[in-house]
Image (cartoon, rainbow, N blue to C red; front, side):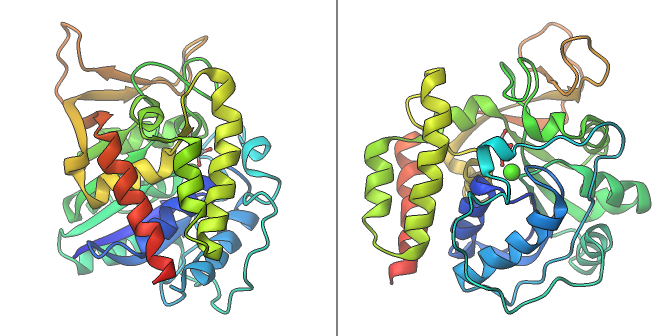
Length: 309
Ligand code: BDR
Ligand code: CA
């Protein structure tokens, strides 16, 4: 099994990604490190504990991370995720508590202990990882792979150019892309292709468990946001990155250079992706551009159906 740390900002689609990950036999989840993002850390950290309780995985330790970006303004997406980050959904009361150790210290400690086998899946702003890199410059040599939900080649959602996770902390994202860690980047391009249709959401709901009911409700929330923009279903942003870490064979990627724009008039927080230019900058990222959608949907639903068994 792959030892992984999940760095996230739950967040409704983070919650679905976590619930899927909890049932994936490929993963040995060593820790979860919440960060401020969709909503403030004083929600994302307790939300992580609640999701662990809902998923029956309260033995996984949770190390709280950054409560704001490295620099600049705090961004939120509570209009999508609700003021508490989980649409006010009635969650179980957790028995576990947050650990005292900070996210960046836990990431480095685990990475060292695993001697280069640790993988990280990041589905929120990259602040925790940037702090870990600043504090422990030798961290990259201990991280086997980092799978990120963020950015994209073609379009943004927070602004016309920028995707939320990167826009929320562009300086942190740029540090992460410069670090020399092998990165798989699931941007908006592939996340919109990795969508669930209303019929597939109904199928998920039919599993009849509390976990499936929650995931169906949050998928419908994503649907209500996406359909007016012409997306044929609910984009599975964070589940897309999680499944890419679980089974990369579901996806197609291009190995290329990615950098993060920090100064543009219209483009702050945009990932600049050198997939097709003549510049051919030295590649640092597997830019994930496509998904085998039928297999993706089957695997996601299979993982979530495990709760009924
Ligand atoms: C990403 O931003 C957040 O709102 C979601 O949780 C996801 O990680 C999509 O742009
Ligand atoms: Ca997220």
